Image (cartoon, rainbow, N blue to C red; front, side):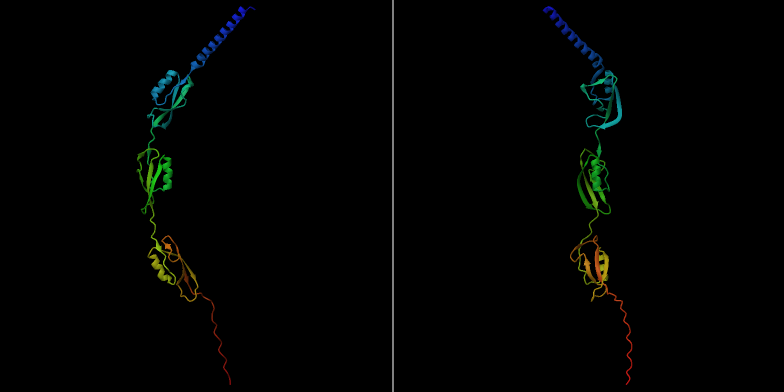
Length: 258
């Protein structure tokens, strides 16, 4: 075969290769890319505008019933779509794109915490995306728990706003210095203690030689210790021990006869 014939064969093979590649490209664009389009970006658009865009592309639009809060997307505008956007994300004609609408910014209100404990308030504030501020305790009987909050309940606030609390607690009872009760009669001591809000909760009895009945011989708390109405007072009181011995009469002496 001459060199001219070889050259013709090479040219023919090259032309055939180019024609095959071109036909493949055209077939791909017509049958594949021709039916797929870049996914449109519908975020921020109204339902009417989004539906018009989808109709032009031959795509169905489905608006879900759910809504999402957003600080940037107006109410009733699209805030989420089921497909990513961009030239590399394709959607076929006849496909369905699901979207959700914006409910607008999340509105946070200070919850009602009256009568609740600080621990419960901490949990509720966390659920509302708020945080606990300063806690102040005050004696305010008979109410117990939270009696006020700042900002007040129902106030619209931003996320992570600190809420300070005023908590009512039972006033601490008056404290005294425990007196010395030893060698005093319980009958005299009890009214004196009760007059100061102190209560003798336990009385024990113990025999103690040389001391009359009803006299205190031990006490708790000890003398000088702090004591209040919350503290139980225990005393040990003397009581003569009953021996249970019965004296028998002595027999009369026999008469002496001379």
